[in-house]
Amino acid sequence: MNETEFVAALRKLPLHAGARGLEDDCAILDLGSETLVITHDMMTEDTHFRPHADMADVAWKLLACNLSDLAAKGAEPIGVLLGHSLGSNDARFLEGLNEGLVTYGVPLLGGDTVATTGTSTYGMTAIGRATHVPVPSRKGAVVGDGVHVTGPVGRAMLGYEGDPEHLAAFNRPVPRLAEGRALAPLANAMMDISDGLLLDCWRMGWVSGVTLALDSALLPVADPARLADCVRWGDDYELLFTAPADSILPAPAIRIGEVRARSGAPLLLDETPLGDPARLGYRHG
Amino acid sequence: MNETEFVAALRKLPLHAGARGLEDDCAILDLGSETLVITHDMMTEDTHFRPHADMADVAWKLLACNLSDLAAKGAEPIGVLLGHSLGSNDARFLEGLNEGLVTYGVPLLGGDTVATTGTSTYGMTAIGRATHVPVPSRKGAVVGDGVHVTGPVGRAMLGYEGDPEHLAAFNRPVPRLAEGRALAPLANAMMDISDGLLLDCWRMGWVSGVTLALDSALLPVADPARLADCVRWGDDYELLFTAPADSILPAPAIRIGEVRARSGAPLLLDETPLGDPARLGYRHG
Figure 1 (spheres, each protein chain N blue to C red):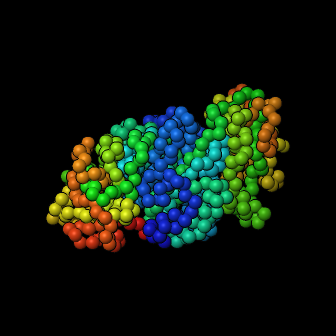
Figure 2 (cartoon, each protein chain N blue to C red):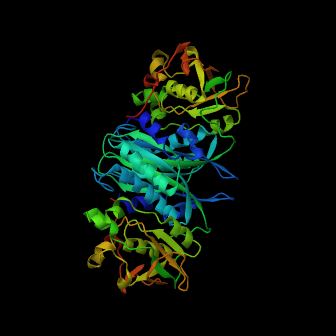
């Protein structure tokens, strides 16, 4: 099975109402006095990082990608649980994790540690408190909304390729926690861009039952000469959201298009339908 | 680093108060109207299961060992998040997971799916609701308490070795959810036995600052001729707890010893101090 098939099969298992049909970045747990936002993300050698990566960067990024999911729901982090595979650079891993926890003021809640014989896999569960209900989902995009992104995409790609100016974007991504909290009250749909701008726009259009119409001249990319690559590479962790066209945005963001009634594909780029998600970004397996 | 060194280093990171110093099975999140109990457990090829294991059993066991941690805190499961490595037997994994979720009435909340190139690692986060506060911890054992276990140990070992009578004990362990809920109001200390009875008794005595004095004649083991092995092998998932000596227990349990003031080792077996945890059970790395 590939990732898409596996997740489709998971949807046939008993799901919690807060799982949002496994179509969102996070689960939402309504507890009366509080609404919790919960996410679990993994990183694995070869797929998410190179065998010789600095493990401090790997730990930072594991934390950052989990916090980014909370950011996309406007949640304030409460704590994280770590699933750790013991390896040869555990001390560096702990240094990077500590830097991240201190930087974002997030404490460790618990976790598990195992010995592995092969490639290492790390998991993290992040738990946050919703600052606005209803918690924005991927599927709330409304016809007439503007489509926005909080910053340029493609920086992580350039960093991965070795561009010194963008190394930090790949190794030490910044979760948009403050932006997410500011935007949550007015965003009709919001998610983080982890698998590529086009693919994530396609997904938002798909689950919202609308069409996101993007204008390539508006897309903020780190290298305009490589626009097609920048909008397909992932790992940037900017927020993608839609909001009513007349909104005064409380956080810096770039308008990249508009939401239209669904007609054919869930995504248009310069009026060209992009109907097949397979060539739009990163998918596993 | 081995597991003990790594966890010791983790304790120097910023910890949530609900992390209980990383000395308990679960984190406790007090939210005013509710107290949540949260745990994360992993299973990895070679260490926790054989490369040719039936993946349905692996999925069941991943769920069961997480629910067992909730059971040890008297918590009622709310839902689980799955961290899944795509492999060749994903369909069987899903069958076993579904069986477990249906059996225990636990829905899926979310998770993550990754492609791996090597050995597979699976993670799960289980979230439950405390049915009794304060939530029993490992460190509450009180001098004068009786020490009890909810069932025999060594069955998983015999099942692992191929004994047909005990195969299910190894492949399909049963989390003691009902027992944990019944016992939580009177247990001064409680944990599940995942790494071996002696090691887990040693740990309970250690963190409680007391000595658990066990009588070998009272230890319930699946094979009396191999008592020393049965009390060191893990994977049994019975509950270990201490309760006041005059308690009327609301769940079946076997009294195996008593809690005394700390004098030397945190564990005595037939009055012999067992001071070195290294030879008492299973530890990683």
